[in-house]
Length: 325
View (cartoon, rainbow, N blue to C red):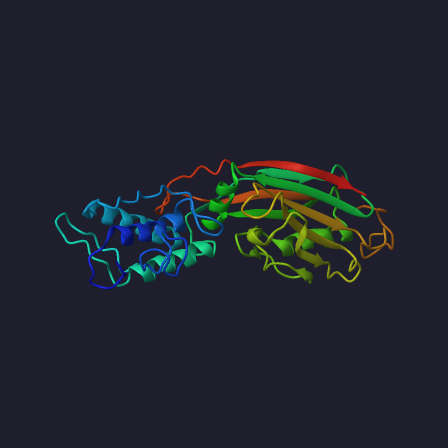
């Protein structure tokens, strides 16, 4: 039966509202992705790891309870994504004729767009404490300090669900210096300018500002990453003495997106300036006195306060490398 306003729902229509995988009309004329595909297992940018609703058989009578289960599922995802309130999810009572509702396709398509966009409106999120803190072994490295950290999920699906639900991997960069000199300050300022670097599903953001933006890869998100490092952000010092010094953040996956379970993030601090530091009085103080660089990994994880149930992301983290040249 074709999907039309005021038609009585058919079994195939109902199943299409659950399980369609495209927004065209692949199942009984239902022109929307189904809620199971949007928020259940899904695929790619769709799916939040929620429990799928059960399809009905060809001879089953669709009950008010089944209709209301669909509405409840939709409302839960709306609550998490914080899109505009749905207009099609008024509960049905036992004994009512289960009728197709005019705005149902529109509402499903809006939910699909929100999840595919990485649930950017979600605010049921919690920021972890430091999961990995990597500190250069000593001050005085010459050319580069490189630090890598990784975040691994229990499966490729769990990784997708985390980022689809608004989850992020966060990196911060700081320094440790026994006595802060000009070069130390230049690197500290670069870390401050990076701020919280949050890698989300489709984009990356930084909370800091300032310094010279050399490479802007903030349009890259988890779903844009490959198995080779890509630059997310490169900032160069705007300190007139240290304009050859910079910090660059890279990220990669361990496999193709949707097959990957691990993201690795790399920080490279480069001392391209002369080894002399300048303290405003002496021309050469603390030869090679670069600071200890500090890279810290956090997660911003979806919580279950606004409609989602816990899909158990099974996150582990690791320090991959900590080297200098």
